[in-house]
Length: 332
Image 1 (cartoon, rainbow, N blue to C red):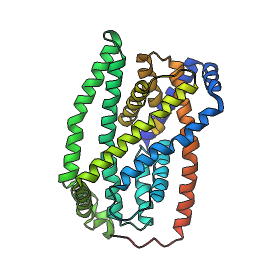
Image 2 (cartoon, rainbow, N blue to C red):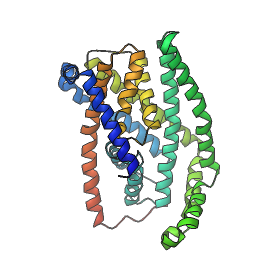
Image 3 (cartoon, one colour):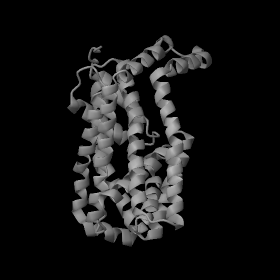
């Protein structure tokens, strides 16, 4: 861990502890006990949105690739990003390496992950826009709620041009070639001959090749947006089991705006404190007490641990097994 993640982790953990102490550990335990063992059903429920994400990733890959293999890689990617202090990007690096072990060429593997991440941001933007619309329909005019809605709408509008620019630059620019040239200029004496090779141009070409298939790009966005929407069912079920049921629109608003907050503060490991603050802020607008939304966050964290830790163990097993195995010959 570098200094910034360590500071972010400490601050996030302190914020989480302060929230739990402030609301009362006994109150939160009572809410969670009200639901009981049924909260464990949130673990298998997570499989459904992940299948949507995997199918959205699969349409971007030209080489024959089994959905089951992609699901395993996506499971590991998610666990690394959510449970380890890697600023939500370490899972992608591991994902590329695991794809290469499946026999995919390194540039093709990296390009598929990069484009999938970019399209995931587009899908998340649409999901957040849907959540803001649900919140607008739910919250009355005037007061703090109106001011918060205005801030959300301004943030939504102001974030659209940078998102469009990122897509255009990635689609038409020479991003990785420029990064490679910059690295050569400043680090040329420390780079190996392999790293000095013309990888940047090849990666740009692979990325452009994926973007030229507009139909599959659109299908990928639809699959990922569907995954976000289906994933909001976790909030709907959890609040119902906690004894505070909400409508589907409220569940969408809670999940989407919390996802937005986690993306903005991606450097905070496991989004400690960020997830809780997001849920509590939106929950107040929807009439949910901070104790309820904090209990919801704890239930989500329990699911993340129970769903993610086995993935980390599988990842370590694959790393050990792969260390002594010959990589499969690359395809394409």
